[in-house]
Length: 79
Image (tube, rainbow, N blue to C red):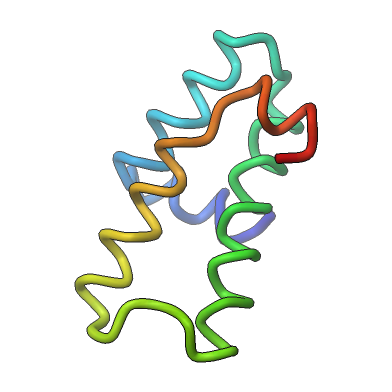
């Protein structure tokens, strides 16, 4: 959760927008942060396996897109 809180504190736009949107979709702040964290954790897991984007810039863009694609319904359903 710390990484998400740090991104919010640093005003990382994709994370901030997503947490705010997830709250509008009905998640409380705690669950919204956990939802974003789950996307980051899955991305990091894939990166460790070597199946992520090649350059740091493209990896960040890919991660940001995955974070912004997250929605409360999908997270609640475990997708």
